[in-house]
Amino acid sequence: MTVIEELKKIVADIPSVINEKDEKYSFEILIAERKAFLSKKKLIYCAQFHVHEQEKEVKFTEMLKESGVGMNSGIGDDGIGTGFGFKTESYNTLSGAREGNIEEQSDLFGKKYNYNFDFGKIRKSFEKKTEELGYKFSYQITSMGL
Image (tube, rainbow, N blue to C red; front, side, top):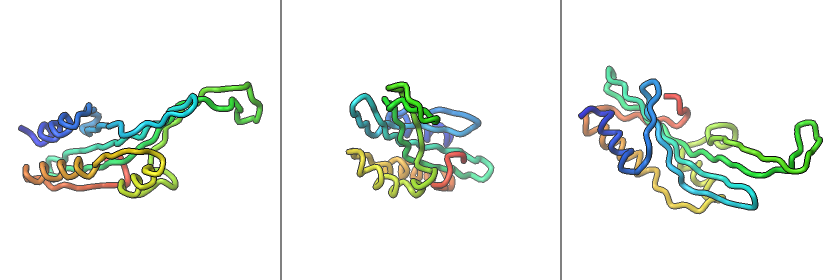
């Protein structure tokens, strides 16, 4: 089995669906949800890996992403409102004030959500399998664009 097939097995055991684009593999796991009056927010664990065969290296990155959907006051950018509106937003933890490693991100989101998710276990599984197969494991925290 190739290193990619072995790493895909880790994702299948989580369970999660793996996506492939430009030889980069990614997956997401819903960690927590918050529901309030006419709105819903989700906290999602996102990870991505890329196998560099020539260097015998696997690059791995992860982050927490929060997205929300719900009602707003219906006031537009011009200050004029129509009553109620519907709002969808998505933002990740790698922009603005939310930058940092996943442990710092988890501390931040732990104040808003109740969850018990061991993201370190996933990273360690990838690292262990990578090294067992004779590849170097590189962990990156700054970009999902390996």
